[in-house]
Length: 361
Image 1 (cartoon, one colour):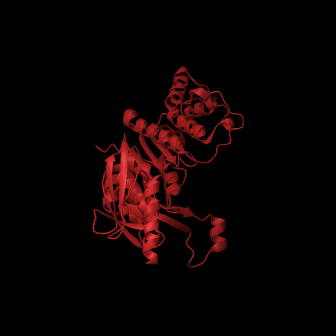
Image 2 (cartoon, one colour; image 1 turned 135 degrees about the vertical axis):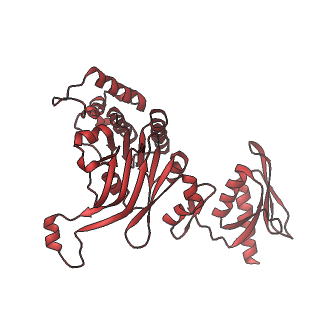
Image 3 (cartoon, rainbow, N blue to C red; image 1 turned 30 degrees about the horizontal axis):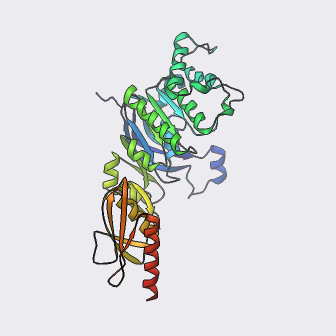
């Protein structure tokens, strides 16, 4: 028995021209629709946190809106708990799936509590009256998201991070097995981004929610997601999707290919992109651990090509405990005296000075 929350089969997403636009632009070479991504076969399981990644313009928001039923697919199908979304009544869909967008909501003077309570609209009568059970669900959503302290403030008075938590609280109050979020961490500082991701992971793990979020936060996606849906261009303008656990995408080179740019390279060890340092001078590095990692980063930023473990060229040796008494010994070459420093700042000055002297000679 298939317990997928969302399934797509041979899905194509994109945009259709409205009839008037199509008539105005009708040419043999101008199609009535534009395909952004095609041949999409996805499965989303209960209790799973999936991150949707892809370069700008790859169609992440288009896919999220299509999965939510806000935008119609060009072809193929989207199944929500085994039901074709095209045949579901909007109220039925709203009981199965909630959507959080980055668009700023026009709320006037609405309070946080009132906005969260809107999540109960699929269950209330035509007058929108909340039952005791509805009120309990609203309070639970507020407690879960940590928004109780400002539950009676106006939405317009909140920070971006607080507002985003409120929008997630509304989705929790809607009490759906599937939650879709389009860029929920956009414009947030690092602590708020971590808090939002942690909250979503907890909803998946502890409550069995199936959660999909689109994001540009590659490092957070690699740490937090159970699977990644990676949108990438596979020749031409149409994108395709690769799905796998984060570690497989790293080891198989999919992430590096999807985001490759001149001047940048993907570091498989840290799971992040960094500047490609084309240093003109070589420096060996002897050491390991956290100190060696950041020493290498500092040397590369200073214009050196670092060769791990090389001691037959100009090189740096690290000694001491990482919590105290660290020392860096720099051996500038055959004719130079070793320089012993107690900080990376001093080490870099010695290395840069040596490089300049080497260039002059």
